[in-house]
Image: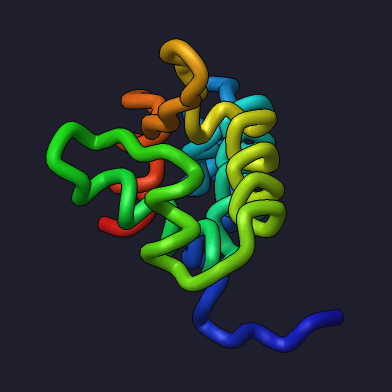
Length: 119
């Protein structure tokens, strides 16, 4: 027999109202949204990639070439190209070939998602 503690009126975590179970916890993200957000977080968690995104975002026309990024970061071209490839595959940046050059810009929906994460 359990002693009476006076807390018998405390409602359980899940309460039953009119036959339906109601939980005070609601899922803020669907599984697909959570996986997408996790992908973005993995990609932008690298300091070099954050610097690249910052450089692209703050450039006059919000796009940059590998050569410009290499000079600004003081890194070698293969290193910068690797980071751009990872971000391109994740859909964070897009590449646009123009003649013999390739310009990179941040995908607008990804920019919004990253900004939302920082708020």
